[in-house]
Amino acid sequence: MCGPVDVHDTFGRPLRNLRLSVTDRCNLRCAYCMPEEDYVWLPRADILDFEEIARIVDAFTDCGVERVRLTGGEPLLRRELPELVRLLAAKPALRETALTTNGILLAELAADLQAAGLTRVTVSLDTLRPATFRVLARRDGLERVIAGLQAARQVGFIGTKLDSVVLRGTNDDEIVSLLQFAREIDAELRFIEYMDVGGATQWSPTHVVPRAEILERVASAFGTPVPVAGDGSAPAERFLLPDGTTFGIIASTTRPFCGACDRGRLTADGRWLTCLYATHGRDLRGPLRAGATRAELAALIRGDWGARADRGAEERLAAHARGAFADREALRSNPHLEMHTRGG
Ligand code: SAM
Ligand code: SF4
Ligand code: SF4
Image 1: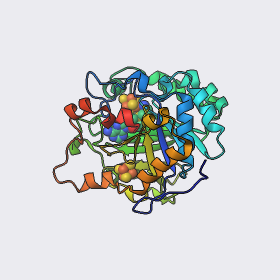
Image 2: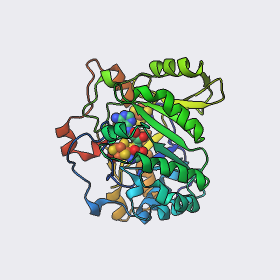
Image 3: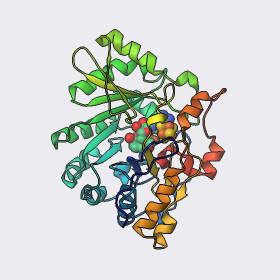
Image 4: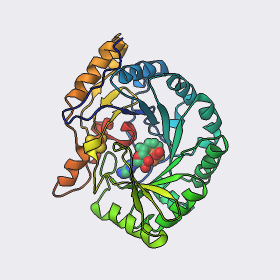
């Protein structure tokens, strides 16, 4: 085993956070993430089992990773997920094992996840109107998400976050009500700018509600938001309102934060991506199943991160005629490009 040896990329950014996708399947079909009718799914035999995931995570912690976030697809669709949480939470090198979920199955699983040692939950919730939920998620389920949030609170999760992607003409009139709702349930809301990434084949700049406009709308309802110092590498800029409420904005589209990005991604079938916009990734499943040791896996990870020069969102911002990053055909021939495969 190699001890934890920090690795820095070509811009001096360390590797601290790993977004770990545990499945590419989902029980919703959000219009900004999975707009098409059918998808090419990862073969089941390729999906890493929990013991394999734990071994790969060990190699990542040897390279400096301190926080893991379980994602997907919808991570709560992965059977026995609390068991994986238990394995990860027991690792002394990990300061945090968190989860991003659409909340549909959270009411059933919150107690087990809490007991297993999950640190924190982020729930994606874009609307408080059932009809808008149906338009955005292309399924029903708002009541279940709300029940999931209540259950998370009841079993004792603190520091819960709500993530809302804001789409012009669909839910941008809910900026104020979402913020009020988050305050009522002791959660911190983060507004996310609509990104052109992965399955967002219908993305257009006209549907993006930029950070500046979100701030204006919040200010006119609640008073001027004041920036709060953050940890520098977190994707959300945080703000404080005069009544003490805090909220965040993840402005990946109009104000990318690549300069401080310390995040890597692992797909459910073991593909290691150094950027959300990466078009290629390294297969770690192959070496793992061929018997690579922890040190050998760590050396592969360290080599890729050391060579990293990614700043995908900044490059997209600089692009002249901006449209969707990948079209339907590209996504069908390479499902690893999908947001629901790379974990958001
Ligand atoms: N299914 C889980 C969920 O929705 O929370 C986890 C996976 S999902 C891919 C992770 C996050 O990506 C969600 O908060 C979702 O809103 C966000 N997301 C997906 N497509 C997006 C897009 N085009 N622009 C901005 N955020 C997006
Ligand atoms: Fe929606 Fe998350 Fe499923 Fe994408 S992966 S369709 S964002 S619930
Ligand atoms: Fe990091 Fe790539 Fe996202 Fe920029 S686009 S913040 S480099 S993952």
